Amino acid sequence: MAAGGADKFSVLLPTYNERENLPLVVWLLARTFQESGNNFEIIIIDDGSPDGTQEIAEQLEKIYGSDKILLRPRARKLGLGTAYIHGMKHATGNFIVIMDADLSHHVNFVLSDCSYFEILYYLHANIRSVFLMKSTTYRKQKEGNFDIVSGTRYKGNGGVYGWDLKRKLISRGANFLTQVLLRPGASDLTGSFRLYRKEVLQKLMEKCVSKGYVFQMEMIVRARQLGYTIGEVPISFVDRVYGESKLGGNEIVSFLKGLLTLFATT
Image 1 (cartoon, rainbow, N blue to C red):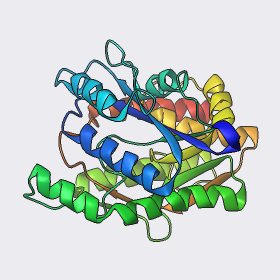
Image 2: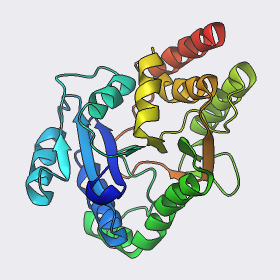
Image 3: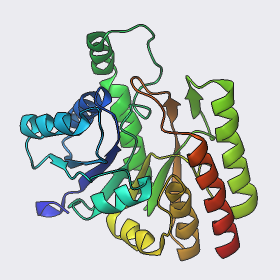
């Protein structure tokens, strides 16, 4: 917690080939926190991106200051879950925010055929709506004194935009299977926009065995086991602005293996 007892937010941003998206998401986060008056740090965990993402992160560290942007790279891809664990070692906030670095959690819809500067203008024009989404998550935590607040695409006015039918079916199918097999008490287990109390996330990580995308699901399942409280807020998830999705056949197989492991052990 920051001096004087004020809350501090540590944002964990795992990256792999996010050269174009990273400056935008960092700019958006910094503006959001600065306008709200909240203390923050953004921890970038880059897994050896070959596209120059790490070099961009180094430049951002110089622009915003090493107290606000912390680059904590790794030599190669070692899994999403271990990236969060690595980032947590360097977090000093009492609240931890985990999210994607591809702008999926920031824009209500994607403008097609936009230039870099048009997207910047759009993001700037919508900064207040972005802050509303983040403040809603934080307010939800304060209202219910929750240990975890999770963004959900499958409740209230939440939704997914920009995905083709195949991607939607995969996401819905994965979420349906987790609900049937694990009964987690949360509507969106595969989402990656969450707010944790730091001490809660630390304890969950001690129990976690997943390394890849199953990590998100296991966190909620373990939280239920340990009796932690979970709040949910609807979010709009949109497809990435730049780059390609990391979801592939290997990730789907890994997810199914992880799901069966959790079903057998929880």
